[in-house]
Image 1: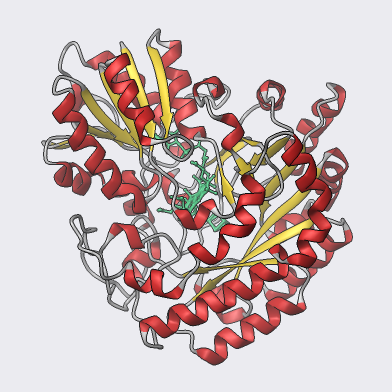
Image 2: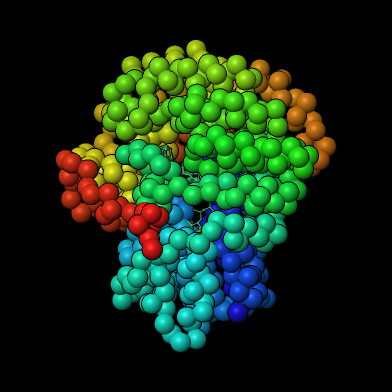
Length: 493
Ligand code: B12
Ligand code: SF4
């Protein structure tokens, strides 16, 4: 069967700092190729819309699969599906991905027949099963399938993550992917899921709080296939188990594979497994993202981060002592006033790390979606991107954005300004010589994108598709199972 996979466009806000390859679709594509399908991929983060039009006309796919990891992309994908059904009425249109799995029924409703089926959960199992079921018209029986008739069987996890290593050749504009100064950069996955259970996060609810890993052999094989000099390790929390990180490092050393790495981890994991991170530092680890989220004990408790300011500060010291470039994230509560923003600005300027600020956003699939008692001020999917306030702000909304943007601009100038540019001049020159302009463009794009008027006016747009409101607010967190997409791994037969 001819199958076209489509990743929607990037949100401008994330494109400032990075643009990453569509790893999920590359894995789904790999599973479809293994079943003998003819697969192509259009990534609208990196390709113009005309490329999609061309593939639809020239390739004439029998099936088109959209990836919807982000709520903010829902309207774009629904509209693309409607257009597609008009052009190719016989084509099977399906969609899957992280966020979509939590709002599958509603999106089927928005699409009004243009999306035949949503596949919840991991696509390596769902997509091949869907195409196999097509000749018998048994779509509704496919695990994870949600159709206009409702949800069928629960989704099935891929048997082993070693199967279906990403088909990277499907993403043809590889030089477009970058993260900060790592330009170009590829992405890689060593593990899937997270054993923690932070209240604002859906990484653990999607995978039923399971935690799985690729074998070190498969992880290193995947790395060996990567052509790019930079690699972003997408694991939610890298190197939770020291021995796994160690074994991958040992095999990379043995095979003399050398790259520059960027990873994300938790402060307590960094402290517990310091030696592994030091080993990776010697292998090329240059950048680390630490999700601090809050500066005080109460904030950390509210997010159920299961860590303390003391542990976080100690971890920052350790990361500094390794000479890593560290980025940290702080979640801005819409309740913040001028004084709170000023405090955070002052703190952020006093530490050497890159500080990133996102706005607290309850997402379907998280506990806070159910327990957040403040009423959502909007149900516009496009505003659920952690850059907009979807909860009531204490400051007037425009004023809130002025403070937010002012804080983000101060912090960005600290790192993207002239002093920082001077430090990166060598890197920039080398990139330009190789024709890589992603990082350089990013430096100049900031003021255009982060702009209080713009962010405010985005609340005033006409809204065609709206998120389902949380059915009810509960003071106590709901039973966990009710949030899961995949059943916990240990309970499966
Ligand atoms: C890498 C990553 C990114 C990359 C995006 C890379 C890309 N182009 O896809 C970057 C850094 C740009 C990014 C940005 C953001 N991210 Co992000 N991101 C992740 C992360 C850490 C890993 C995703 C990944 O690559 N996983 C590995 C691949 C193999 O899995 P996958 O993509 O999920 O694909 C599987 C399934 O989803 C499914 N699938 C996917 N597509 C399709 C399509 C079809 C047809 C089918 C059948 C199945 C299917 O099958 C795949 C294989 O099993 C996840 C956390 C997580 N654990 O998933 C957060 C996560 C998805 N991001 C999140 C958020 C909030 C964001 C941001 C809004 C804010 C932010 N954190 O910066 C922005 C906005 C993105 C945008 N629209 O521009 C949240 C999502 C919350 C939510 N419910 O919406 C997550 C869960 C993080 C979290 N802990 O809360 N992100
Ligand atoms: S925020 Fe990080 S540590 Fe917490 S559940 Fe999500 S991925 Fe795990």
